[in-house]
Amino acid sequence: VPVVAPVGPTATADALVAAAVENYGQLDAVVTNAGLLRDRSVGKMTDEDFDLVLETHLRGTFTCARAALARFRQQGGGGRLVLIGSPAGQRASFGQTNYSAAKAGIVGMARTLAVEAARYDVTVNALIPVALTRMVATIPAFADAVAAVEAGEPVPARLRAAGVGTADDVAPLLVYLLSDAAAGVTGQALGVGGDRISVWTHPTVAAEASREGGWTAEAIAEVFPEQLAPHLQPYAPDVPAEAR
Image (tube, rainbow, N blue to C red; front, side, top):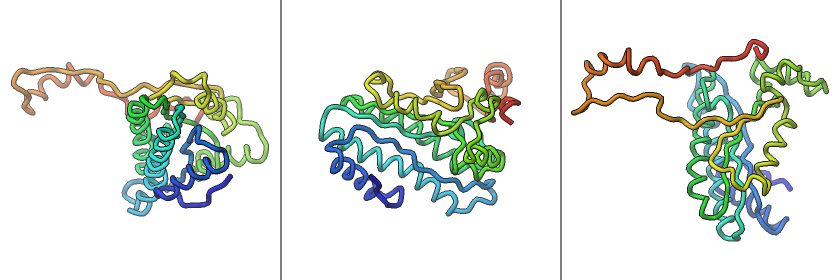
């Protein structure tokens, strides 16, 4: 059943939960899947470009998750929250400062909500899909592939092998996360696309150094090249040639 309302406001989230309860008797799961893009390099990105993406993706996820958790607590019996992230929130994505920030925030939100919701037998996971959809059709590199899929053509094997598919490829992992079989899976960022599913790592310390009494800039400059620099992390994705 549809609820026609802008994504982001608390009133919309409350209306979605109320519609589920009114039509189906209770709330079993919430998937925060609304999205849009306003891609521009940071020098060209306006306040409106930034705010609209954050309002839709990040605030919309927050308000819906909060409303869902309130209902799950009220009715008892657990529940499922699946928050939709993106590879753009996991690694660099040129021209998507707003979108990357929102999607990184969603994954961080999922981890914290998983901790808070555990006492109510509610699982919370972030799903990181790669799919050829109308939203990514606005990205020039994917426009032709999206048009081909919408015309009924299959996704090329080279793209499927590289982890790029359709929404139909995402659905099975989503169904699994909503099922009883996934009762022990929570606080995770799980990727799916084409022929691949994956588990994303959580951020962790890659290297560290200690100095009694603390650090000066000069002391850091002395140890950084040997002790820390070898562990610096790549910040841009290494895209396989078959996916380019």
